[in-house]
Image 1 (cartoon, rainbow, N blue to C red):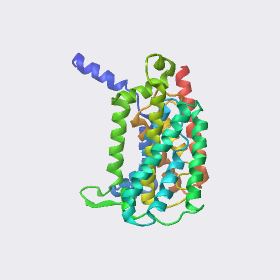
Image 2: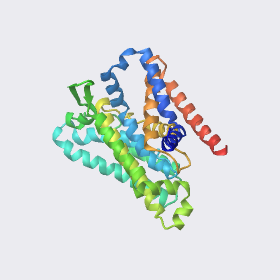
Image 3: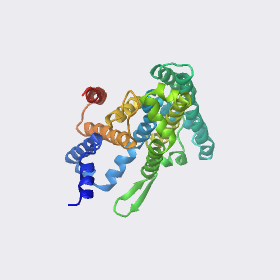
Image 4: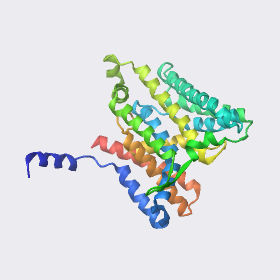
Amino acid sequence: MSLLVQKRLRLVIHQPVNGALVLLIVLYAAIVAVQPTFANPPAIMVFLRRAAPLVVLACGQLPVLLTGGFDLSSGAVVTFTVLGGSMLTDGDPGRTGMAMPLLLLCGLGIGLANGFAVALLRVPSIIATLGTLLMVRGSALMWSGGAPSGYLPENFRWLGRFMWREVPVIHLLPVAVPATALFVAIAGVVTHKTVLGRLWFAIGDNPRSSELAGVPVRLIRISAFVVSGISATLAGVLLGGFAGVSNQVGDGLELQAIAACVLGGTELLGGGGTVVGAVSGALSLFALFTLLNLLGMPEPLRDAVQGTILIGAVALQMARRQS
């Protein structure tokens, strides 16, 4: 065996294993054991479609976590998007072209508000985004009169609902799956291949050193929250596509997105994480929820398991740092 081949083998052997990806494989194998139909390509596609909003949210939450912050408002932005979409369109397909850009601007504005509060007013991100969560959720409920009214037109729901049928091999392909794959690819390039992404890592690792090196720390932090706000809006469009209108549609999703990132190896204190890990964590978490539903477990147990996973993942990270 040549020296070059030996070096490459050592590199492969010593690459860190993505624990979330391994967990995903184990959990999906358990799902197939409980319900064998999940091994069929159409069922896999439906699983990916339903997991798509959480994947998008996790990718949006990642930049905020990389810079050492939290965004607790993303679930409320999802609810705002779904309720706002129903109010703006009122079931009229002709209004979708107006509603979509307005909702994306709202997501961008919410991200800017979070970023300004954290970067300029120096409010801790967990407090700033908690306040935004309450304001956005309250605004959505006031706008809708406290209960969802109207419905989303078909062209608004197309991204989350439409499926191409009679596709070779996989039989059906939800449009949400390639759309989410494209979003993940863009997130991966921005996070790992651009200057902006590298600055997210640098600020999370050592904000003081970054500032002394001339990095516009405040502006970069604001950009992370803007990405999160826009991602939450896109997740709301996806979720509204197949879940319909509800005033609780986004409840708890912000914690699920954070848990997914941490499960995928993202450092809660900032400076470390990958898009692949965030996506793997989101799919693993959704697979766990699916398995619990198939086993007939009560929904409150899902929250308990999610909290346990979050605490365990953070504890493991701290143990690795100390070792």
